[in-house]
Image (cartoon, rainbow, N blue to C red; front, side, top):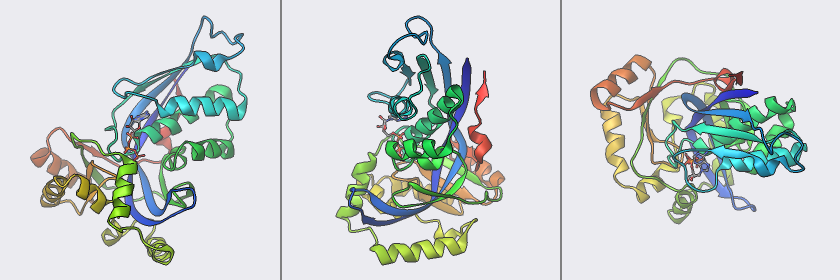
Length: 297
Ligand code: ATP
């Protein structure tokens, strides 16, 4: 059996930052949108020791992810899936073709983990959305929203996911950086700068966002982590300015950065801006659940 799926990256169309919870995570209010820029994942069954007769198939599972050093979130997803479901299927290899910039604020690791859960659900026949959501919550704040790609309102620390209708055509110019930013360091910098709202302030942001849904007005397309990313990488200000000058309706740092996004109401304008000013960059578009379909290969 061979299965494949895409792991669409996400953008935070808005991200309002709230106080830190007891578990150390920040509360937030964010509209997250999956986009067509995506990693590719393939799952295949392994032979040999992994013929299903092994007492511990998990010991033979393999995750290949060229370009990403160190522990991979997809390996953790695999372990947690086996633990939570007691699936005894033989060992598998999951191969990841990275197209999303790494440590760049597009939640590529989380997207890959969510995509791996979709592949495993199909491979095992255990397609239980609630169970997948619970596993996803344990993997990280950005994972639950991506188990099913699309547009969501995420609250809590990102794990309370409310699906909202898709939006009209728009284009997202994605300008990667040659630098990386660690998400925890950006949150720490936000604390150091005193950026987080108090609980009341976050409630007000939530009310304003709800009133603007599903297609947020430009004035609400705000990333409250951006000043922290700029404080750590001041050169991003220049990129934001270039994206604005190229005609973007909104220029913003993506998530915890350092990728910069240009949101264009008109996708052809995004492509024209890319061709004129950002050759080699991608123009993505919003994508819904079909962007994460699992296919036999
Ligand atoms: P987020 O917006 O969720 O913070 P990000 O886009 O900033 O994510 P990722 O690309 O998800 O960052 O990578 C963050 C870290 O996770 C990297 O330093 C990387 O080593 C590690 N990582 C683990 N698994 C993966 C994966 N499958 N793809 C990318 N990075 C991974």
